[in-house]
Length: 243
Image 1 (cartoon, rainbow, N blue to C red):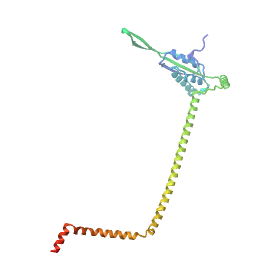
Image 2 (cartoon, rainbow, N blue to C red; image 1 turned 135 degrees about the vertical axis):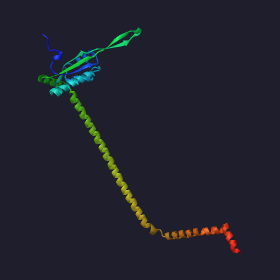
Image 3 (cartoon, rainbow, N blue to C red; image 1 turned 90 degrees about the vertical axis):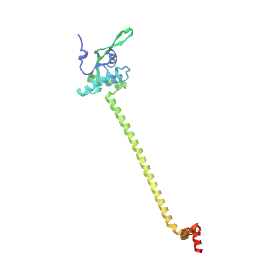
Image 4 (cartoon, rainbow, N blue to C red; image 1 turned 120 degrees about the vertical axis):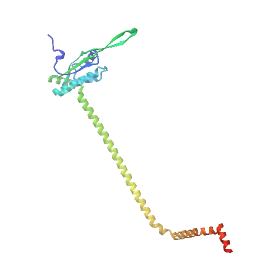
């Protein structure tokens, strides 16, 4: 008597066809996550060193998304029911070798299939009790991502608050400097006004200075005539008068 075939097991599935890797390499990674909770399987794939872990993680995320969108099953109630890789078509290529020979290159492909099932109520309770007793509660990928986004938003909000505080401090300092400058300008203008009022009373010799300036101007006006008399033209006019 045979049991249920692998491709006939109930659950929500996702498939990646014509993956550019051999089925043997994919099966090594699929064996690591089979019958594991979705959160644990995602963690295993995240820290796996093999190159096949990346496309297999995408297939797992696709299966979990199908279960959530089509059947409204939360990710924490899902586990990897089955995971297998079938061989796909092989691409034939040739490599030149010595003495005009050529050897065949086989570029193998495979079809990766992951089926996620839902825990029963009893199994889910036992799983939660075991995780609580051991203290190893692993959130699913969506919950972990939501927590990371919340932490990022909180950090961004704190940075914006610090920038706003710095801006307000700068504005306050600028306002204080402006008030000090206005006060200094007011004091300067007051001192200048006071000095202007006192200057005419204190300077008693101002009229004498103006008179001296008038005398200097008169002398300047008379200087050209004297200069003209002293020149050759002046001598000629003087001789003519004598005649």
